[in-house]
Image (cartoon, rainbow, N blue to C red; front, top):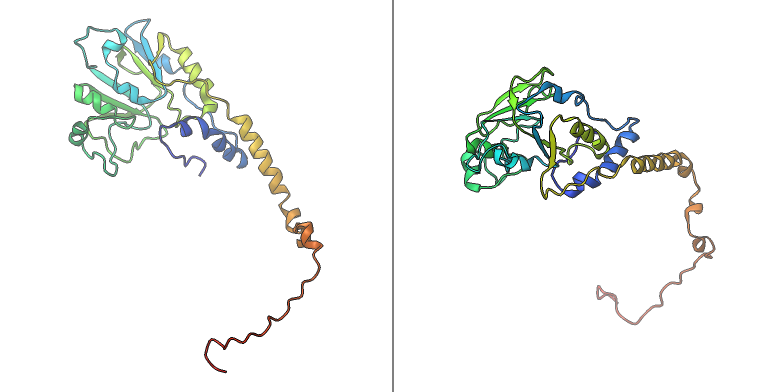
Length: 266
């Protein structure tokens, strides 16, 4: 279960856990996997301007805040996109949780959003939503979205839409830190201008976890190699020296007392 990863957007799962996950691949005799399919990705899109703006951050939650105004594409009166297209393995359009909203109407009353339901913000503003799943996930999410959502599966062909702006997220709690150089390449390949989402807590690239993972894997391998040797050690070798030198102990029978037995018999 090498890919059975817990997912949550927090510091530990974004930054600290990747050495342990990489070590699991190495222990299984596999190199930690890399991202695929990003070469030539931007070539499939048509942009309204040669300097089309891209804003990037670690989490998709920031996409819920963005309007055309944030990209300086319109006046302050414009608060909605005509269309929002998401290329993702998850629809980010609301998922049922214990003690959480189960429908769009409940979500709207709650008034909060996260990386799991930021698309609902744009639905509420009147945007038309489209989701493209990757080819490796043609069946999509196990839970249906809470709002109307056009879906399709990526066929690697040019996308027949003209785009005004882009939001790109690294998804560091899902994408390993040993792939940060690939995110850098994807960002640098974008044909327009790129801007970091303000005050988004960005740290890039993250520390490379692979040297630590290889040391952990090597150390565990050496320990496992010694298991047969350790298993046949005489028990005395595992005892403290003070035990070995201790002379046999003789225990005297406790002296008799004048107290009557507990059962009252004399």
